[in-house]
Length: 270
Image (cartoon, rainbow, N blue to C red):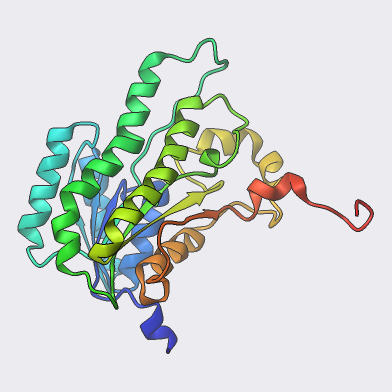
């Protein structure tokens, strides 16, 4: 029951898609700093290599880059094969973080190709990669220490977003329900599947929005700040550790309360 045992991820083998930047980098850093061996992947090979070098130097864990464009199913299959070759004893954690967004000024201008791109990367590849890596996840799974799949959704999949991003919002809602479907089917294999729904974090995807309206966004969050790297890494480490081993099929908002921010009541209201 000691803290070190309950929340340790030391020596775990972790795969983080989109792990070279943004929220993925926050997650990867948290695991490496706590002694895990982390494989990061994205289509930007140079960024991955630089990030992996920096994180490994930071230690005490290790970070290994594997370039892959998850839009391409063949490259996704090749990624799974590389992981099988490098980790024949299996992996402990898969974090499906890679994703894209697409905004337009109006619904009328929203292009059909946005749906194809976002549903492929944000939803289909979450399923594809999980399916391909199941043999590796099963190898290290047990009743006491299940393997973990953590899908990164969004609060825009829980509420109607302010911006015109219908494909993004729909894809993230799909990720949340896919999480439940996978959890129901993989629990018997000693694999938990959960999702995190981040609110505003400082990332490439959020940069333009935060640059233009951060004060407005923060004003609507009960905790009055955007998320920090520790917030994101901490939630993932909990789900991947013994402390989160009996949590399965849930979607956890990591948003400072922003989805209920407009429902705050004062004594006068009551």
